[in-house]
Amino acid sequence: MSPTTTSSQFFLLVSIISLIGCNFANGQLSPNFYATTCSNLQTIVRDVMSQTVTREPRMGASILRLFFHDCFVQLGGQSWQVPLGRRDSRTASLSGADSDLPSPFADLPTLISMFAAKGLTAQDMTVLSGGHAIGFSKCLFFRTRIYNETNIDPAFATARRANCPFSGGDTNLGPFDNTPNRFDNNYYQNLVAQRGLLHSDQVLFNNGSQDATVRTYSTNAAAFLRDFGAAMVKMGNISPLTGTDGEIRKSCGVINS
Image (cartoon, rainbow, N blue to C red; front, side, top):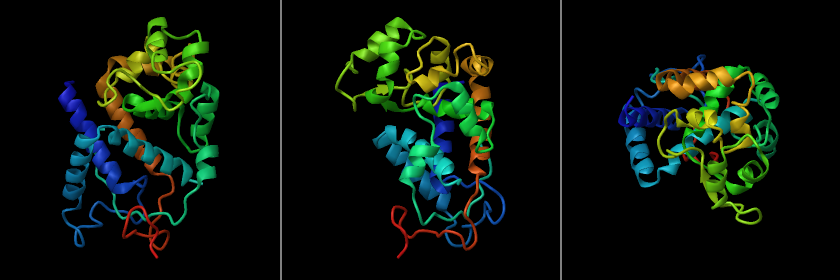
């Protein structure tokens, strides 16, 4: 699969996410929800996302992160039809984000357990972790790994230490893989080579139950893209707000007055 094709597939995914947040579920949602009130909605969103990601490539990772965080906290492919009509929450939970979301220091059993609590399988967890195919992490979250862990490629650890000192530099950034602005399967190739950036990345490939899945995705980009899309839909099916629950905001960042 060419980089151009892979990038365009990811861009389609990001555009869709920006449209619907984390609510792909059935019920009162419909792909035609805005057909009358805003018939060119998808074109508008796609154009805005295109301009945004072109101007600041890291926004792709930010949108993907937003999707993941909203689905986990608000819970209490390649292509697919997008059911629209979801409502926005009237609340936000910082404490929920701290307690419900996986830690970058989590071990494999903890990750599997946390995803299972949301109705997601270990394979779902492994493929959704592929969201780290794009973006960066702060030194604060990978310092322990590059200085203290042994299941790490020495050259990789040395390279990351150049921008992440043993003390200080907490907000310095390191890429999750060597193509941080392109959505591909390099993330899994890095895990096989013991170049996972976070502890919670490398535990997916460390003589554990997910080794075979990681190997598959490391050599089969098409399988990763297919399964990632399916897992995103599954995660998006977690308790959408519809009908009289929540609201459709007039401004995305502000609750309606």
